[in-house]
Length: 464
Ligand code: UTP
Image 1 (cartoon, helix red, strand yellow):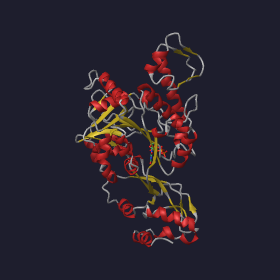
Image 2: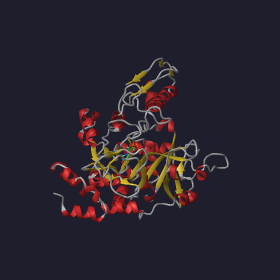
Image 3: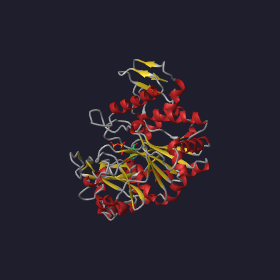
Image 4: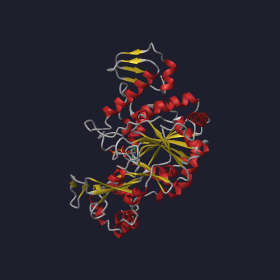
């Protein structure tokens, strides 16, 4: 039986079509469907559809946007010395003040892989998965600083079960059970773009999808992660996304800049190579750091240049952040206030006649929150430029696409590891691919400690 309260809500908010197939469901299906329905905030969905949520005027914001106040790579005398930052970052790591957040709740639609993206093999020679690559690196950082660094992994209903099973089958790739904390983000229903009706993916199932990486804050609060971290003496979180195997996990330089600038949220950026590159634009508007998505940035603003010809809005978001725990605590109550972004997508659904419809064009609106919408909420935010060849190669698209494919990512990893060897004086044959396991060397400095000019690589080599 359906709870009267839910049945009333469904009717009151014009969603009665959801119950059209109720009588055809088994008692078990009815019970699980009733559960889903009770988790839906129908009032919010109505508000989102009717557009009561103030949508930003992107054109006006873009017109007012300037480059962010950033620590740039080319600066001869940055306001914080690099050596000081590295020292501060190393100290915080060694003192156990840092934890890692890895968001892994996305559906990976563009990649078209049938498991969570974290299970995708990406090691150029080792075929290690994204999860394994990140954890190997984190464990090497722990070893270097003789410290335990907890890893908070955010999953979603799309990835949770598979991820838990995979990580447990592999004994957490060596992480101790108190170092690995898996928690699940929330979901949002897709609605018909014309009518606002919530779509069914089956007769007794809503078309739900994860509520965006911005669901992180609510999910951490709900699962007690912030409290738990506070109890463990964690003051800052290093945040990364599962799909970028090049992220320099717990980079002491980035953490050090964050600490010395007394920043509440620090974000790593790369210099854009062309005006409408598909990255979020990190900008400053009225003294607040924020991000304007490439799709919201008018072409003429994106194309604005400085007198030397370089791009005026140059900073591209690569979704690597450092958060002060107290900042997340202070804004967690406004988690419900992080805006929802609307995305038009083609979403298959069960029609009123009970038959599955597979639209070829966008028919639905999906709602997602973005973690970077926390940036303007920070009293102090810092932007730090990095070299993309050293930190950024996300796996986004299936083979055959122009960018961000498994092949291009493997090449980027191999090129980076080659550059570490070459900087240390080694010679690597042009045709050879290389991969370095973080236990062998964590970075260029680690390679320098092991290698000299006599070191030669002539064929594909995995140094582990
Ligand atoms: P993307 O926005 O690139 O999405 O996520 P995706 O799921 O990887 O791929 P597409 O767009 O469906 O093809 C960037 C990062 O944010 C995480 C993803 O797991 C990825 O690490 N993410 C995204 C979440 O954790 N939850 C979400 O709801 C969305």
